Length: 153
Image 1 (cartoon, helix red, strand yellow):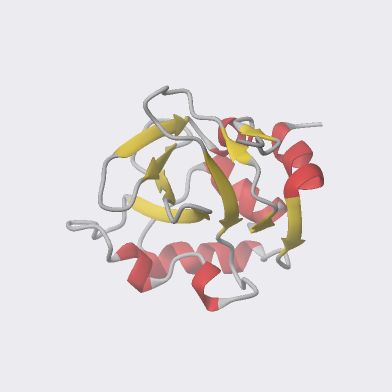
Image 2: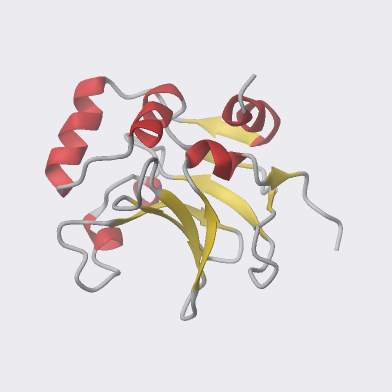
């Protein structure tokens, strides 16, 4: 079982309906981005969801531990969680065409971002509100490998 499947079985409390290949292609065309292959496959197989706040254990010790609240998806259950909203893409200056795509959110209000122009599968970073960004993973599979049961701190 891959790390994404394991994380979904353990931590996902609500999944969104799976999109079609056409819906993914239409979103890419609408926002002007080509998703890395692994993220595209993630959308077709899992398509985001709501999570029970597992800890994201970052590889960088300077990055704070935070809990995953949701991953954006196509046709999400709530408009705020919809992948590719213009308001989300406009957060970053000079992001046209988008190279930074918000794909999730944490319990502390930090953004999970996909950097699409990074080699291979793109990279996943966490952007603290009004602060810096922290590298988390090379690709979505590696990102889901960072999830652990919430600590009791």
